[in-house]
Image: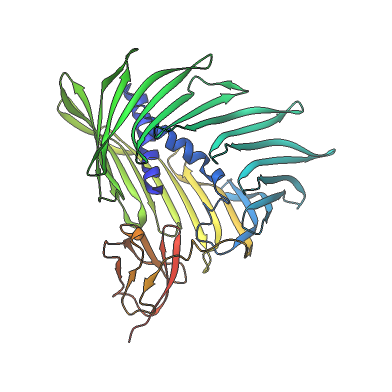
Length: 460
């Protein structure tokens, strides 16, 4: 699911760019919800493991550097404190001289849900608040508000925020409202999404736009299409003031497998008269080490041309991730920009360094920031049952293992040595049998998404 969210996020970026340059806009409620959820999903977790997904310990110190004059310049360092279960408790931030000038506190409710992140600055009069993020939940545990505030004139002022209103009815449908606001005032982009479900599967989705005075007007509707329980696409409708009318947009999905492990193609049609004509085609290709390429093609007046190509490449451990954006202009591919994130780990999988780079105005890939982690501590309160949950046999083995859980079918896996080097990767077949004929004797780490285990290989 995480891979699909990434794909839809990339699709949304590309379509938005295309809309700006070609005057054609495709508005998808589902994509908006996915993006909104993605931006705030860490608030629903007990602890953010995004950078420490496979780490066995947590760092007590983080040093931040900024790239300036072709060199790394010290920016600040922070001492990190944790609760026993791995949740961040606080961070004390210091300058070059070791003087503490800022601190961050993380507050949780009795269910360990993140409620507030508050940052304070040190002044002659003591600690003064300057920035905070607050989160609220309803009785079902759903996030209902995410708000950033800044301290101005001795009071909190809303910088920006999102409010989620979520209710469920007995007709197996759900209603979600997302409202963006500034200084307590709603933006015109505030939307309400109504989902209709059948056996917990979304079958249609309606979008309404806020127009003021607590009023929403109907905007668009998507019917999701299925064949043999496989999501095959969607059909768009528009509201004509009285009823829903079939629109010009129709999408047809193609998946790499019945499990919908990877979206390979999305054909987009528009209606010309009574006929559906292919208008756009989005192609996704899996790359080595779990990356993917995205290509948007346009079909108009019997011709097609490549519009944009987005490529992500990353190894299974996350040592390096590339985001490459290309545009097809004048008969050639031209790189718009590139982002690179590089991670370094020790032999135990603890993150040591994270470097962020992006292309500058000259097109050169330039470092921007660097974070260095140290002073690792084992937090014994963290529940690691999820991390070590891959059952398999035989162990030790000579050249293969068979996984015990069918949930791993078609999932991406990687096998690494104790130095963190990937020695084999691929996708788990339906037989759940992984072959290791080419490997030598030794101890290896098998990882599938957030799960991992050790495999001992012995050969005569």
